[in-house]
Image (cartoon, rainbow, N blue to C red; front, side, top):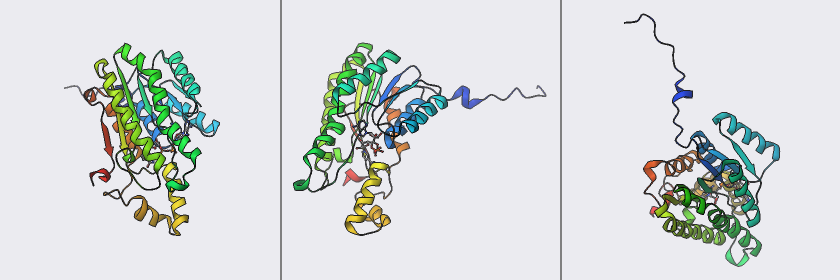
Length: 278
Ligand code: NAD
């Protein structure tokens, strides 16, 4: 038996699995919240990445460079506005010019507006339908031919529990999210023979800037504390009484991009603490 041990290996650097090495991903709305966590998860798996979304230019550059350095992958950024089909086409062209392809598309960009139907502003309806639903049509039609040709692709649409059930005062959001569940099914059926999968993820409430805004508005509207809004309003339909975390959603996206998920397609996967089991 040798009396000295061999040098200790750096197991983190050498043995971290990189199942997505060589893949190229676009995540829309990835400068914040759920999209940012998904982008980080895909980069950790080794995928090159295109980030998209709004925000302060220098903060976005810090994010972009930080993800690239941490995970040693190329990370691009596109400021494409998801309400503008021509900018969406430009974003896909930029990813294809750099990576030569798009293997993974996560349609995540989304906004919300809460108001009774009779008072719902028409421009908010148009914006929600454009960003939360139509953008996914434009991105999907832009990348699908290439995925089919290469016989590999993963499309993940971030829907919502509101893609499966309704709630009052969220007409546009519920309509858009039900719509994206339908688009998911059609995409899955058209792509199935080509080893391209398409699934929708339907989260319950996740504590992100999108929900933070609702907490503040509800506290004012009902004259109650933020804590009471969280417990009695926001988490009321969520039986486990806790927020879904962005890391839980990111892990589900990573799983859907992994080989054991090859047969999961056309699904609307609830990750909602039991909300839609009611
Ligand atoms: P968020 O506000 O933190 O992030 C939204 C992202 O979309 C940001 O990067 C923003 O810049 C981007 N975006 C907004 N408008 C855009 C546009 N016109 N063009 C390009 N990018 C745009 O919100 P989030 O909570 O992380 O939501 C992400 C997705 O998850 C949305 O589709 C949302 O509907 C869905 N979702 C959220 C929750 C929740 O509780 N937070 C629950 C279910 C589903």
